[in-house]
Length: 284
Length: 253
Ligand SMILES: Nc1ncnc2c1ncn2[C@@H]1O[C@H](COP(=O)(O)OP(=O)(O)O)[C@@H](O)[C@H]1O
Ligand SMILES: [Mg+2]
Image (cartoon, rainbow over the protein chains, first blue to last red):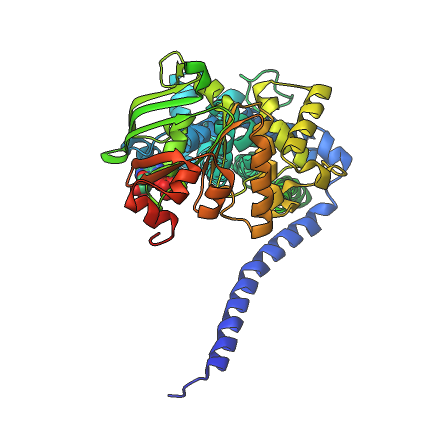
């Protein structure tokens, strides 16, 4: 057997690692660019802002866009306060006990549950048991259950990254614990918390399974009037027009995929810029 | 008379869980005096200091007995507001630890949170505190510059200004110079002498010359006990215990 010099080994390892990263990047680039390329001609102001016509075979996707915005905003309203409050409790107040360890374990495991399970859980709890029906509010609650663990774990990590000495200084000057959290800890942790929030809501924006049984409509001739109505949503609409409607023009499918992808991409860019802002800000 | 005594500490015992960190400590701290605390590492100096403004309350599983009377009031009495106590008895730490904000925001932090001053009053208070901490002349051109761009010595004086801004009566310092070079140390020592005019100061130090130079009284801690407490000149020239003499002359550390 030939013995390679350290030098050669080094080169081979780098080449393999480099190839691996190219291999992961290439499919993503191909998928994204082919969708954008084919979808670009379909996307226009009419496409974005008009109601679907002709059994969704022409017209726009406005109700799906507005529906996804409703779902993301509603999910944010529920999951941000709950998630951040839980993270503050776990990081700042809770002692390291059996119970808090169980809670953390539960949070980690919740993040790994397939989204269809959340959908079925939401159907059972919110739609049927709490009798909310298939509605925006039931869908938002279901998406929140899925989003909250993400927000809790990232926010807790961000809170723990704030140096203990800042808390000690603040309390040492006569601030209460809550004043310390509000005036010192939260501002320092804010970028990290925002990153978690955006990542969590991003997932909520893109998932179909959790809203399938809890609030998404196949087709609605008008926009929802209240949070107890069903709504159309981008990911489910894409699923519907790709698989459930015969003779669907492919440009509309590509157009819808482009819009959904752009939505998610914008949120991701937002998260990335918040992270770099955080890195610049964190000087300790 | 109690109003001529700042701290009257009697039979103070302190425990972390089952470990006793302070054992029957008795001490009297007089107003406008500098009290230095010396002793080998781990002998309880920091623990003692944190008892004086109840910062030990924030550590779980601790126990305290005995009494600490501040200006006639037992600070561990149930009716004491510990946040007001901590405003009154400020703490300066070993490592300079300004917030990653501007100089102004650092000094304004306490007054803002505690609602001591706003607007012009706040600005005035910040300027006064920076002057009192002997930092004003070096940074007056730009109060908006980040605190972390200052040198370590300046950062430590900023931390002192930050404490002064909440108008305390007593300032506790836990080895405030141990992270600083000799010049910065010298500046802090001069500052401590100036602060003595208005504040009662208790300072922990590892530096014997520092204790000898700046303090009026010196207490020598040994394994959680205050084994000797006297005028600084006495401690450094003719201490009553051999152990004290060995320590201050550097025969063991
Ligand atoms: N938070 C804590 N929990 C448990 N033990 C502690 C804690 N802080 C200090 N101790 C212990 O108490 C003793 C005194 O420590 P300390 O007051 O820091 O001494 P010094 O400041 O004189 O070096 C040491 O034995 C130390 O290990
Ligand atoms: Mg110490």
